[in-house]
Length: 116
Length: 113
Image (tube, rainbow over all chains, first blue to last red; front, side, top):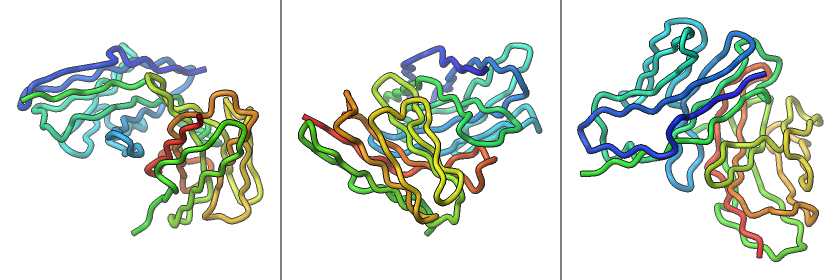
């Protein structure tokens, strides 16, 4: 069994300040973890993924996430927010070894607001 | 450019009508998926197809039907049996059924009144 909890439904930051979006997961097996971003009325775009290689994963647009097994966390960070980062972010967990991608579990999303 | 297209972007229907949402991909991916997204919720899997002429129910298949007659196409029909069809529908694909990195289309917003 697996589950994912995004700890904040809404985060507001000022432009130029750091971003932290929190994600905790639960998994009975070694997980793969993903962060996706969704702009309004658009599809999901992959930001980054963890698949048991380096625990610090770098993604697109300056985002990164650190896999912490002891804390079962996979928080998303960015040193300096930009207005274009305003969107909905989804944390996703999946078994590392899977026969089908139907085993993905999506978090409920965190809406990031960036203010001037 | 390779990718997934969904049409139309916005769709309006009267209650009691069936409606079909289109999903086409030119990525040469084997597997395709349909999700439903409601406000404040994560994506929920409706149906998925691992190969042509094969598909399986996801977590919320009731009131929906699909077909997979061609590798590049995976249309979703929302039937009148779906009790709450108004939602944002997303189609996705993976290179093979065993891959877990999904590529998403831009979505179709269905409103039923």
